[in-house]
Image (cartoon, rainbow, N blue to C red; front, side, top):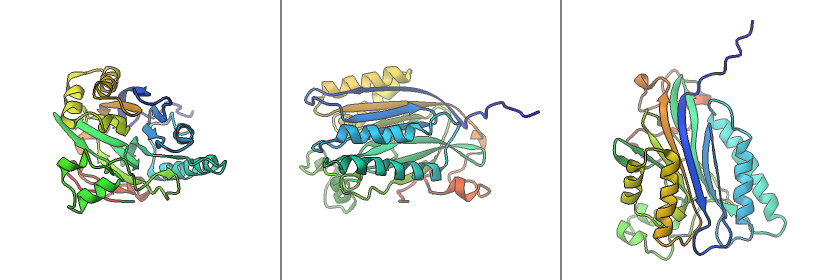
Length: 280
C-alpha cells in the first residue's frame, strides 16, 4: 500500500499581503505571490511601457511552483530563466519591459527548514526576529554600489538623485542575475517582502515598530501599506508578511548548510544570522 500522506512542509507559515497603486500613479505595476512555498514581490519598473505586464508575467511563471512543501534552488533558477523569456517576449512587441523580483521560498536542507531568498533589483526582503529588523537582500542599485564603495554616506543615500537607478533587473536590457541566500529559519521569524514604494517611503524603525505591534500578518501588511500612503505614497506599494509558525529540525539548525546535505539542496550561499553578502 502506498502512503499518500502529504509531506509536512519544513516551515509552516501564516501569511498576509496587501498592495496599493499609491497616491501619484494611475497603474499598479507591482505584482506579488503569497502562496506556500513562495512569497515574492515583483516591481515593474516605472518609466517602462509594460512594467505591469512584466511583473505579472514573472509572478505567473513562479505560480506554477505553488503547492509543494518546499523548493530547491535549481527549480528557482529554472523558473527565473522562463520568467526572463516571458519578459523578453513582451519587450519584443516594441515595449521596454522590465521588473525587479525579491522574496523567500521555503527550502528543506537535510530535513531542516531554511528560507531560500532571491532578489534582482531593489525590491527588498527583511527578517524581523527577537525585536530586530534585518535587511536580508542587498539592493542592486547605483546608490548601494556607492555605499559599498564608501563614496556615499547612509544619511545621504535617502535623498540622492540616483536612488531609483537599479543595476540589475529581469528584462529592460539587463542580464538580471539573481542573488540567492540560504537563511536558517527559526520559529517566530517574521519575513517582510516589499517593493521600494514601502522601503523608500517608510523609515526602517517604523517598519520594525509596525511588525512588532501587529500580530496578524494580514493586519501588518495592511498597516504597512497605510503607513506608506501617510508618508506620501509616491509609488506603487506592496507588502507580503510571512510568519514562521513551525520549523522542522529547528533544534539542529546550523549557521551554515549541514555538511551531510546534498549539493543540490545546499547550493547557493548560506547566510548566517549575522553573515555577509554573496552572489550566485
